[in-house]
Length: 116
Length: 113
Image (cartoon, rainbow over all chains, first blue to last red; front, side, top):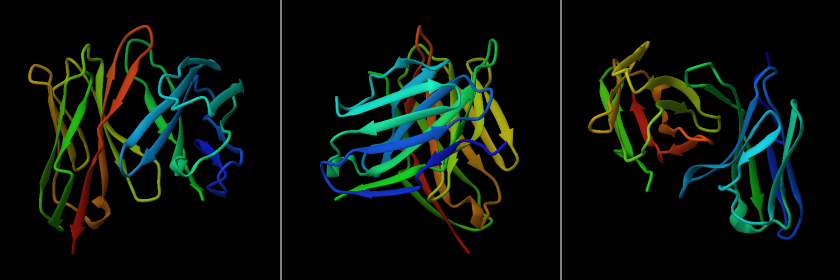
């Protein structure tokens, strides 16, 4: 398996522009997570999906952020309009919940977003 | 408030030496605790996962301990190698209708030759 795939790996955009980050989870995983990582705040969970349905979006910073999962093999995180403070590395992760036990999360390589 | 605190923030040791990283949490209820290793420019990779009933788990030269009574965990690295230079992140999951996942800010470990 290729693991969790994210694109693009790097994105540089100007303030006010729309940014779309993409994620393909590992086949068979029914959970998908979006995280943001900065030096100041560390890793933050933004939103996660179970079977394509958003479960907890309490980490989404504001209405400028939206996430979708139209099918089991694809998810997007959109920022519109982008601001310089959105600059961070955005990770996607997927997992399969094991019956009666914790699930193993697999992270993608991340998208480094720079908003100028 | 559910929190995960890690110490130290940064650690520098010589290759071959052992070290121990600490994680204290105030998360309740508790489901499991994980340690991740994150190399620079890469996504985190899971090292160990421990549930309430487990108090130690090993993965090669990495040994994690968990004291659920005092809400403390440690990650011990034996005979460190240059490739151990990375950030180590402690993550606690709190169960509920929707699981809550709380991340520590990590310990940055530098191994010097």
